[in-house]
Length: 485
Ligand code: 2AM
Image (cartoon, rainbow, N blue to C red; front, side, top):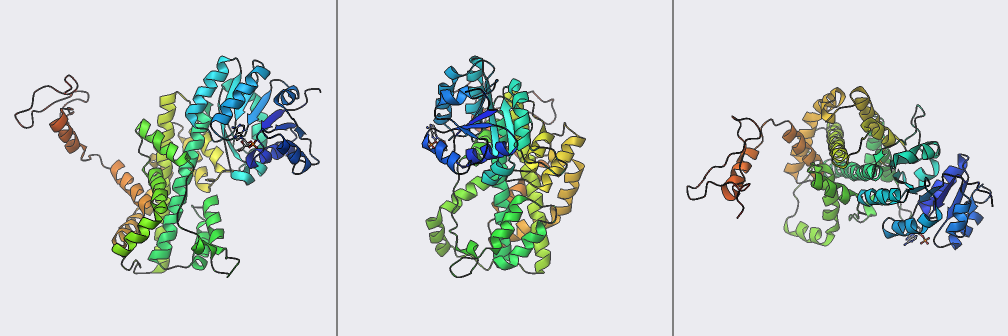
């Protein structure tokens, strides 16, 4: 058969199928393949019926249908399935052909695969695809990285199928070399963990502190969605709060067990932040909060031993609602500040040239963290591409200042009343740490020098000179850098 297909997609699970249908809608001819070949026929007979989509029953048949350079996109389970398909594909493809991994791969695997596939003369792309089933079908956020030479061959397809913002710009652009695409997607997921935790803490405050019912909270979130918090996650929270149980018409949210799971990308973000030494405190708290939630039996037991006192906040309800909104907004600014610090450190460490405003634009639509807020971040980087810390941008500086009083009031009252607000409070602690020109690390350095002769720098001497003190009179004069016991 004549090569006629623009791209092949392997993997007919939900994301793969929807991406194929989306590509078809935009005029591309797609050839579909799946390990379990019967799913190809089922897809053609059902979802893909009446479209231009072609099915292949073997990899050689699939490859023979592709125009050059061949574009083969994997939408399979992250991990060994990707490596296996790369091995199967390499003998069938030619130099210049492109293998794309659109799954949720760990960026370090992508770094390795880019090098490996390039060593065989082919090109490799690891791309984040966000937006779930709906996004994949009608416009996801797409974050591609890997072999730069592949981008011109993928750009027309990816930008056509991606979500668009109001001015028509696609939520897809080149992210960077190696594992940059998957790194940015991982960070996106970490930020998603943070955003969700912040909303959950606001919900807990409205519920425990103000005694609002889901029906009473629904209009609160509807109103918040009209302002600076306008976002997909606030919008779905609004709708969740209004949803009733089919059985008795009571709010469904109250019937859902309060233990959360995690799939790993939040954890990976925190692990990477530990490697790079960047304080992603809010995302870390979001991950750990899920872990605390999973300790249901222990929580139930501890609640009997340490029963909570009356958590109700005194004072004007509407004023509190506004305070909680401002505390959420300020904490969210901190979370994105931390996320951008992480990406900046990763770019430096792995040698990527990341476009930070471009990343905000990619996240502006299509993905789970899409929000008006990301438009503000994009504007901040447009004005000042070298911005090292989001808090130093005039817009965010003003926003944080405007929220500070409410933020402290909410965190302080929650602490006094025993309502857990780990993300709100870690955000505030980070903010206060950041604006402390002097921290107690002088004492820490003294302790380290005392027990381990780790040396310290002095405020009255130039940086880079290290001193050691014989603190007890019995220790040696030798510092640990020159003498290790
Ligand atoms: P399957 O339909 O044959 O199970 C999501 O699980 C997608 O990844 C599916 O298309 C699935 O194929 C594919 N997949 C999962 N593990 C795989 C493996 N080890 N090898 C190939 N494909 C795999």
